[in-house]
Image (cartoon, rainbow, N blue to C red; front, side, top):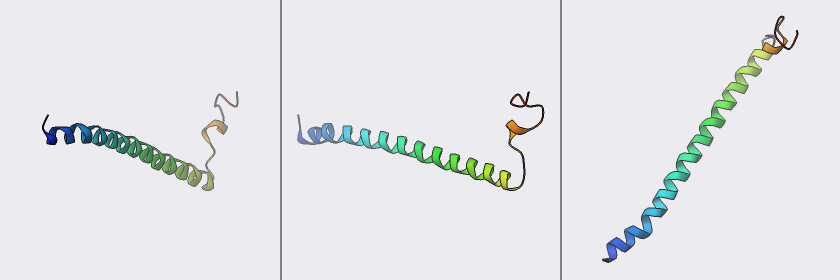
Length: 63
């Protein structure tokens, strides 16, 4: 086997693992960003005096 093929055989798995790691970390960071945005929106709603959905009259939690 020529040396360039040996190099490719050694490098391709590392590139694949690196790409998989990047994809997973990207998904984690995006999920964290979305969760922080949702929490900020919920806190902004609480500060504005809006009642949480579970505390509204007629909700299953009140029944």
